[in-house]
Image 1 (cartoon, rainbow, N blue to C red):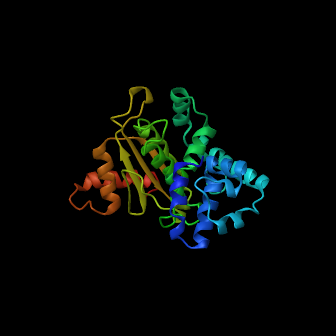
Image 2: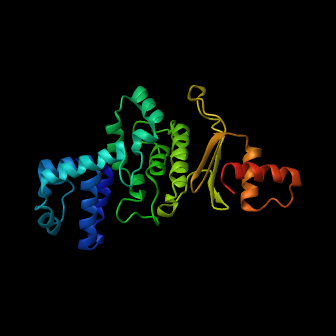
Image 3: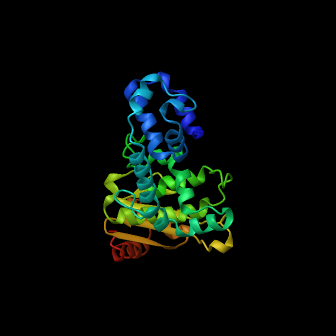
Length: 265
């Protein structure tokens, strides 16, 4: 049976032109392993819900061996990294994946398949026709996926840990100068004076995760991630944003010096 998201897509097919309907089916074939497996097993004329006759004619010519290979390659890039995906899930979310394995017994490949088939993955910058602007980084898409409550963690209990690892990965990506290729909408993040700034205290995280109030700052060639209090973060972002006129001169000077030492001024 196709994935539920795929069923919804198929139900809307009659309202979309042929080109759009072809793209929707192709999208599910590439990213939804359940849909792809059903297609390989039953062919385009055996899908449930059924494809329209004109789509059956188009997809009857698909090379199934090539389809399997492309599906595996996409999953491999998402898991292990590659062009566009950066570190991949293994590199960016080592701690999160370890907890998922311990709590739910899911391998990284199983998690990746669920992620690929999710609506959140559709916002990834390398997915054709990403619905929002330039699209998001893979880490931010994965954070959205986990925050939405996937089937193995419907309450989203792992979200704080995922947020921490996603924020670290986004900061590193921005430090490489790649910020022009993606948008950032991560919770608690903003840009001040061209510098990525985010803060979270992670008060809701279990003590075992050892997450403490953390500041994330990143600019071209520079990335600063470390423990900090909210007052310090707010003061630094005020200086970066140019909203420091009311500060004592000596305090402002110290903050500016700290930012310069980090290469962020």
